[in-house]
Amino acid sequence: MNTPEKDYVVQVLDSPLQVDALAWNALLAAQNPFEEPNPFMRHEYLAAMLESASATAATGWTARFVTLRQHGQLVGACALYLKDHSYGEYVFDHAWANAYQQHGLAYYPKAVVAPPFTPVPGARLLACDATTRTLLLKAVLAWCAQEGLSSLHLLFASDDDLKACQHEGLMLRHNVQFHWTNSAPGYRDFEHFLDSLNRDKRKKIHQERRKVADAGVRFRWAQGAAILRADWDFFYRCYEQTYVEHGNAPYLNSDFFERMQGTMAQNWLLFVAERGGRPVAASLIALSTGNTGASGQLDVNNQAKVAYGRYWGAIERIDCLHFEACYYQPLAWCIAHGYQRFEGGAQGEHKMARALMPVKTSSAHWLAHPAFADAVERFLAREDEGVQGYLEDLARRNPFRPSVPQSGAAPAQTPLPAGRPRSDGDH
Image 1 (cartoon, rainbow, N blue to C red):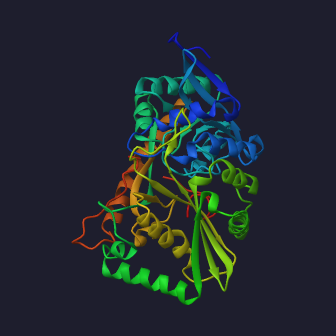
Image 2: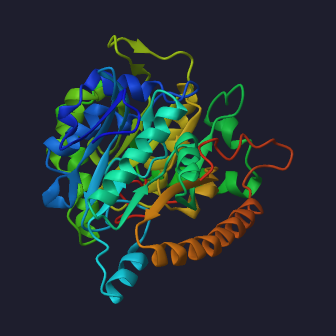
Image 3: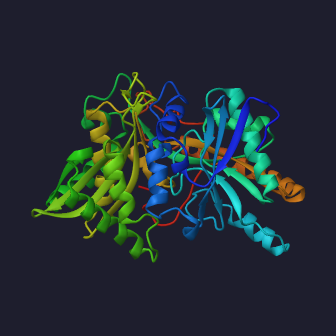
């Protein structure tokens, strides 16, 4: 593809493997100087999605990675997928697809810019500066129009992405996730954190934790290379069973997690629940653990560290085990290791009782059909009013003690998600 700017070259590639991994990761690392890069946009993560056959044309995710180069240097890039369904996105547009079908129009294929099966806010349009980001978006829009696609959707986008999208006339859609934020200068321990909550919430958490302990459950955790092969195998057994119980096949296969163990081990933290010396449940957390730039050297630069609730499963039913494995154990770990935020994934108003506070997330949308674009824009205006009212209602149910300043609704984006079984993205 050609751009009006003679110095830029745009390529639309069929695979992340056609993009240099160090150059991609260096561009990702440059997106937010105040926070460690989102691990789900790393080259290794996206490559594993393809190479494990978890996200391919056969599963409805056809890769089209768009790159922008200036004088041979990678200055802009995004992970774009052609979709022939709307599963695994966590921003529901099934009603839009149905409306197209009722009018005899094709909604699929559509274009999605986001890591597959991953409802985590972060940079989507990787660029060296704001001008380049806008040029990248223009190139993507031009390509979508050229290919006759119905629409383009940037999901869980960053503030910088949203600014570029608004500038180019894309529509914004807002919703809510629930994130926990550490206090400043930081909770001393889990009990110190509990002391910030009102009496009822504090009492409920103590009761839930006591039920798990009284059931004879004990936890251990391991990070990175310390996660043994047997642990990964047990985790996948739990993860797969969670999907089977909901009547679905899992989005991700065992080969994907094997690749994570081999290429991104330090970005994963596993909690294993044991009873009577045998494992009964597992919870897998993702971590931002610093980034590797063009030199390949780890560089943390005092950036905010974030943990992400991702996947869980159990082979025994034990009262309150889900809360312990997916919230209390990870939060205690975050406090002990100086993590500033824990993102609980898609959905889950129940998370507020565990001090995960509502955070507005956003996606950006372009529809090629003018009449449908107008109708969707009106729908989004009404939906946004509902989201604002929902946030106000949630604020009235704040779980913190009145005398304790909230460590906050987490500072993610200014812009919601949804999904299949409570496994991918809804920890």
